[in-house]
Amino acid sequence: MLIRQRSSSEPLGSELTSETVYQQRRDLLKAAGLFGAAAFFSPRSYAVTPPYELVKERASAPKFLREKIMARRRSVNSTGEVVTPFDVVSTYNNFYEFGLDKADPAELAGSLRMEPWSVRVEGECAKPGNYTLEDILRPHVLEDRVYRFRCVEAWSMVVPWLGFSLADLIRRLEPSSKAKYIEFTTLNDPVQMPGQRHGGLSWPYVEALRMDEAMNPLVLMATGVYGRSLPPQNGAPLRLIVPWKYGFKSVKSIVHIRFTESQPRTTWAMTGPSEYGFFANVNPAVDHPRWTQRRERRLPGTIFNPNWRDTLPFNGYAHEVASLYRGMDLARYF
Ligand SMILES: Nc1nc2c(c(=O)[nH]1)N[C@H]1C(S)=C(S)[C@@H](COP(=O)(O)O)O[C@H]1N2
Ligand SMILES: [Mo]
Image (cartoon, rainbow, N blue to C red):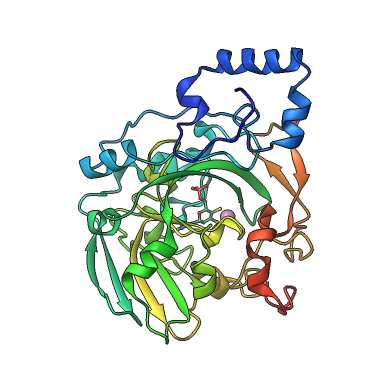
């Protein structure tokens, strides 16, 4: 019974077994000569899914969120890759509202007030309005989803996010036939966000997806990571995760959602139109003007071992998303 498919309702191995037990199981399989076969025939099997330790809830997250997180659906780490440690995921951040240095957000975002939190929904939809975070989350079952995450700066991580499909939220909001895009905006509050007091980007941070991209089941509205609520530096209490696009599309700390007919003006595409496109699909064949996108540093690395690896088209999610771009010249629409 060691080699088998796991259904998504079963708990993760990491919750049931310690690292040692896992290692013993691996050794046992190896001894039985089964490990290679298991890895080859059953990449999603229990035995070969790299486990990860869940992290204890530390923030004083709202009660309803803690309850939702406890009741979440567990899913499999289908990347087949080892996840990046929580310590790295929560201390090496891009969140320019809290400074330009990777270490700034972990140091400065702790003051972000997440209660109360609401999201204003407007534009081409039947259900506009002001939704509290609880309103937004109420009907959705949260799920652990391990995704590769690739920054435009050529580093990458593997992260166990916790959230629900954006498509389910969009269906609730009933976009009209005129809605061709969905736009997301980050909180704009220079009192809480020191980076907004010193220029940098034009605030607030805005990102958007074409509606068919947004409806793809991979797109996650994340509210947690590593089995706990999101640390503020990772975009608490609600952020987007679009795993086949460069990290900058995954907008943090969302307070505003708008359905539009025309393509929204997004922050990075406005800031550097020759360097950052609207689509921003991970594409090893299209270099950034200042560096190659062929390879990436998988975190954590060291100066002695930067852990370089080849970047995959659509960050390895081509079979799920390439059809969205059929007939498009991806060098032109980068
Ligand atoms: N509001 C906002 N969202 C943002 C950013 C930002 O600066 N502000 N940085 C983006 C970039 S460039 C990346 S790589 C990811 C980083 O997410 P992480 O810190 O959770 O790894 O967030 C994205 N979302
Ligand atoms: Mo990024």
